[in-house]
Length: 109
Length: 273
Image (cartoon, rainbow over all chains, first blue to last red):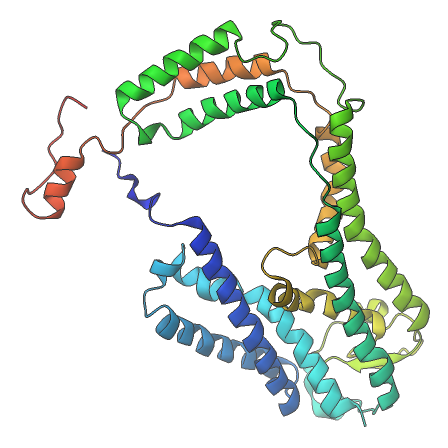
């Protein structure tokens, strides 16, 4: 007897809303983190390590506080969706802000 | 990464006028053009062509058969059998066909007036994507070439030097000093987050989506020209319906509920469904 309960578990519009909210969180925090990295003058690998550390902290906060420790309630593929998939997009935003702030503080007179 | 040692670091300071007149304007222009494109795309998605009722009926009959095949687990076996019998009979008799004759001469999609508008709309959308990107790139190349704009905080390989320092002829300068075109690319990738904040989730201001659309545009043009012979589609759907294995989701539901609440230890397979 096949158990198709997995199919009925997720209501698509709310899943999309959750994903959008998560993406907004990531965009805003990447701007904050990028500004910090630029002002601190991090370069090269230090910048990327800083990004990863902050990524871990923010994902932990999202999982702990927003999802109350149960990401599978809010997202379809639980932890991967929260911490894995948005990483590339956020990285690109972070690089933009990091470059901008670093240039504003250190390169321009 | 040997290029990170501070002893080989070339430090320069740039004129703040560059910052005011190049750095910020490029970013602001890209954001504004993105918003403009988004609004323009909304305005330009014209009225979809008024469809013919027989066309719709044909298409919907096909969808009905496909839905039945896919969602067969939602309805009990008797209901499924009824629907399957009715639909297969209807497909055989051609009751849903537009022209009522079994052999349809393929209508040339290129001259069909309704489809012309749909295709024009699609092409307009693609133009909306490509043209602003090209314009901005040309504008930057024209006005902002020949000088260093910014220093990247991270190192890249020497191969990128040619692309990122396009107008400047200095063989020894670190790759991290780049021209304005690379600032354009950084913005292109990084502003997607900003657009999704300002314009909501589904926005047409994404530069990267247009670049991937440009890549697939060549392959798509060949598929679109095929008229659909609904008679053949109906026949193949009838065949696939007849081989669908039907299994009702709620078949053993009373046993599953009992097991869930602990009144019964396991599900016993019953013969009747």
